[in-house]
Amino acid sequence: MSSNSMKMAVGQLGPIHLADSREAVVARLVSMLREAAAGGCKFIAFPELALTTFFPRYWYDDEAEVAGFYESEMPNAATQPLFDEAARLGIGFYLGYAELTPERRRFNTSVLVGPDGVIVGKYRKVHLPGHADNRPTLPFQHLEKRYFEVGDLGFPTFASQGTTFGMCICNDRRWPEAYRVLAMRGADVVALGYNTPSHNIYYEEPPHLRMFHHRLVMQSAAYQNCIWVLASAKCGAEDGFHMHGGSCIIAPSGEIVAQTSSEDDEVIQHHCDLDLGKRYRKTVFNFARHRRPEHYGLITESAGGEQVAGQQGGTEPS
Ligand code: ING
Image 1 (tube, rainbow, N blue to C red):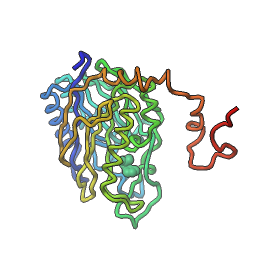
Image 2 (spheres, rainbow, N blue to C red):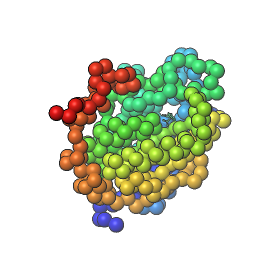
Image 3 (cartoon, rainbow, N blue to C red):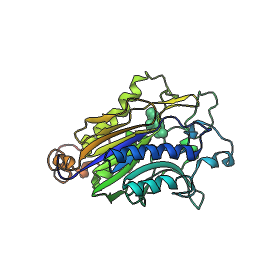
Image 4 (tube, protein in one colour):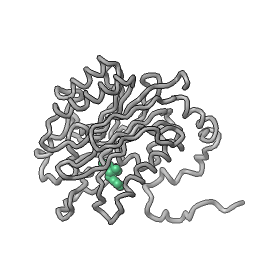
């Protein structure tokens, strides 16, 4: 094990029901943070929207009904015990929550917190899946496009605890561009939380594909970007609506080195060699030597999907 290693953890949350208080959830998070610290971990990743149930599954007619799911400060009275315990134990963490800004803008947000309990950086979810219109005939909905704005902070990275962290949130993990920007900004570790329904409300999909795709996108990204990925689920049946688990720690080789086996609160840990990614970045994925951005322009010129008029791709060989 190289001298540059850090034991890190993922703290998976089981269900959070509508009736569950933030205080009860924070107590669960504190308990997992203590377990990780007791195991010698210096960092733990918690899930997306880790303080409330996954409320975008419900249609609410007016803002007043949904306002209660957002945090207007972080930390705040309910979450301060988590920040205090992290500082006492000297362990950093990633925490996802619904953010309401002073200007009343709403984001699906995560923060990176240092081992002193102070927020190092913030990320706001860029890739919002689902729909914004009311579809009452569906068994449940996916209304992140109604309840959140697209993140306006880009994909920043943060130096903390002797390494460089990036953050993603849930659906971001399905989009390779997110990891590539983070890796180009020097991320060695990407923490991401997720809430992923087990049932596809948009088309018939065999359930086993949910877990296959979940692992596929992150394992590919870890290898292609030479990063550690810490993936933390909120899972199990929240008021009867099931979300899959599969929290895991993925090495820059793309291998899953630790994974949960339950759909409850569960801590997994791994001694992460933070130099492992550098080996790949110096050879097979030496970005400076091998990437050819002069051929990649189309990726940032449009969202894609439509036929890009006049460009059938490629240039005729001279
Ligand atoms: N949830 C899901 C996710 O990306 C989803 C939504 C599931 C989109 C499966 C596409 C396929 O994991 C969130 N919260 O983004």
